[in-house]
Length: 184
Image (cartoon, rainbow, N blue to C red):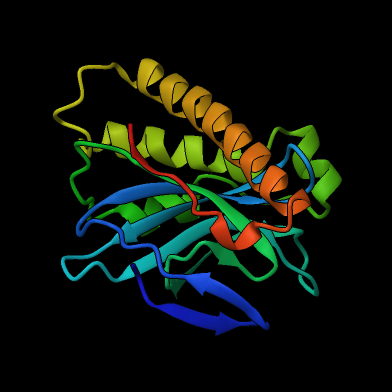
């Protein structure tokens, strides 16, 4: 069993991820809603989260950000709903540039949503950029098929994981929850 670490008074189990890989991670928000992020691991399985998130005190509402993370069963008070590895990923030297250039935020979150700018659509756009740069050479799907597959499967699996977590929560068995780590 993986070692436990105490965070915010709760037990968080470390979730090991494969080296030199790209994962899409979903985290519980409100019932039925998830925060989406990309996690890139290096040769030593050090994980960096890349995501589109809200900021305050700036002339724009949301931005791209990245930070080193320790993959775990929970982040803060929210359950991680899954780590979904995209098979066949080859690291892209332009990765951060793609992440930074996908969206330019509007002044408010409502304006961003009106323009279909969310953490989910940001990820899908990043994956399109990576596909165009040759980061998925072994995949048989074309770009549209790959993006559709990723979106559909992750939505479905995250919903199932959310339901599993909530069932355990209502049974006071949250300590038994472990997010899926699956390959797509």
